[in-house]
Image (cartoon, rainbow, N blue to C red; front, side):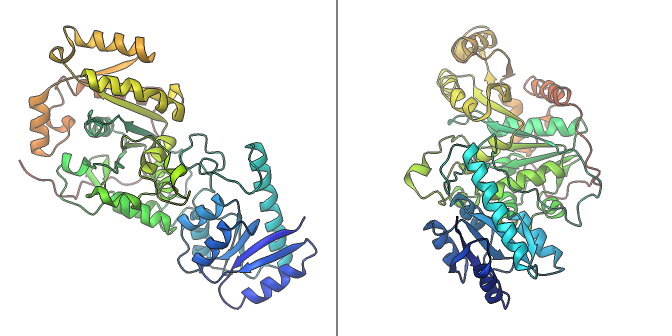
Length: 450
């Protein structure tokens, strides 16, 4: 079998490398010598090769480009300058595997190409796909199974030298109609922090981010977009994420969302997967406020490399240890929740979903509203364990007016107590999350006054 290879190597090393690959007895043929990322992606999309050999200093090389190469079914082999550890680590963060020294013998590079192509073919065979066909799900983008996860990000100088168990991720989802996703995410995160758990709250709603406004934060720099950009460039490490998500109170950090929904193309799944990975290292618990869209049909209408509006939500759900499905206690909202649960459980599995119903009141569904809602969810959705949150509109309005979480403003409110119990249940279910060992700092973001 002839192995066809694309090269995108910068500098004097390119010509000897191509010559050595062509003379290799392993049957390697260089079908195109690409001059930039655009040329490389075009050749990859045309299906010209089995693998690509690229250098770390290739202009505009980022994680999105590496993901597109992998989606095209290519094994990606990286070359870093000898002794340049930062370049090798950057390639690893971008998802390139393996990474070799640029002055490595051609025989070693050929062996790496052969091994990588064989491993990719084996994975595709296990997945039942023809050679050269790889989907976003195979790369772990929007797929809970994560069949072909990228290599783990290398530790930076900011990382603790001691290995730590990863933190847990809770994603808050709910159907369209404002059922209270942000309120649930903010209150749960603040309850976990109040229990002494180091917590990171991330606003990943691409339709209507509102965590910053709920907590009265004056920062509008879209921390999640900055983190995604750094991840796409292979520059997101623990220290960088900590800078982008400074603490707003003891044990609680916030990564703010997009101030304008039209900026949703900035949040691509390939970059967000790295953000979630670093979030597990930064905090014991990460709570993600996600959007409502679960559809992935954009892949049928656009090229697979095109940005997807629901990619952030699907990525957050795929990364979660637990998904909270939120609905409000009105007939229409409950119908939407029941209709959306099967699609959600298809993505996560039924054991990874827990239902939360907000604004529970008799005036909306009838006397003894909590029992009626529980019976309806059991009958029509097979849900037996429901977290019921009573409606306490005056207290919720006052908390919003003061720019505080419900935990800060009225910890004794009937609407707050279910979240205290839920936080305790999570810590009990998953076990006390290990401390990250990072020094605690007081919040330094400005909070608006009433």
